[in-house]
Image 1 (cartoon, rainbow, N blue to C red):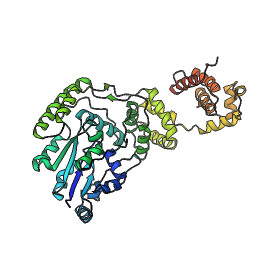
Image 2: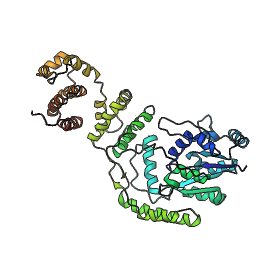
Image 3: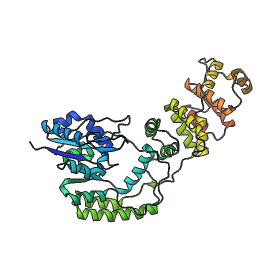
Length: 435
């Protein structure tokens, strides 16, 4: 039986997360095709380092080093088995292809080339999402070379074209529009796979919120915040942070770089890739900012999704008040202020009953309400009225909630949540109640 070793090396931002999730969840199916894919761990996002630690280990300084004994044991296990293919995948392998090739000379590598501009923006977004980036997207590239192709060319020059299989990234270029099916096709397997959708992009508003909160040490909250922000779909999607003039200059530079690379290397669909690159329109350019009202809406959303972690993060922000924007910090601190005591007091005061005029006779005087509930003076009237309206809403009294929220608006005319709730209540009611 002919034994082959294939190593998928990404590079980053070419669908590795989704691919590895599918492979890890379909190990038995792969085995039925004669493919040995070592199982690996993944985080709550479904993200992993793939098979990195199948052939690497960490030293005392936490640096990844090639583990020859581990690798030889894996290869020995493979040769003793009935599998015909050993397949490994990790984007970490991309910059280590030379090193791996020296230890596993029979290995054939697989890499993908993605639209360079898409990749640059995706790498930046990933940096904000997972690697605590706080700087805005660079305003100039200086016509940087096409990502990844220099390293690929160096590898091909040292070894040979058959040692590195280069594919083009994108549904149009994939076999059956799926990177999984494309990889299996390379391995000689004709199988149409449904690709899991993970590691979804942020809206612009979510990206800017995450960039702001990265100013603080959020390592213990990062995964939870990331998962919550990925769920946000309302806002600005399909945007570009690159200024149009820079986009055109860099696109032209990329076209020249890829043209030269494709002339030296035969890659399927390369002519179509260049044509698509030349005719591709930039996504709508948007300024990298978030309005205070949108920032507050995300805070309110996270308050619902991550109430406990939000309060813990609040303490950390208070300890580092010299960092970040004063406006955003004030909104965050106000949103995550512990208000449970107020709600409990209001609940007790209203003595909830299923009546249409819930508590109206008890709201004739906020002064009386403050006295009865022993509410501190630092809590303004708008906050009290807003909480009462939200409490009434939670029990289905939308008409009463609207009346109270309108009173809150008089105290805080520009409150984003207050104005949003008024619109929501009005949309839920068939006829807007008279004042």
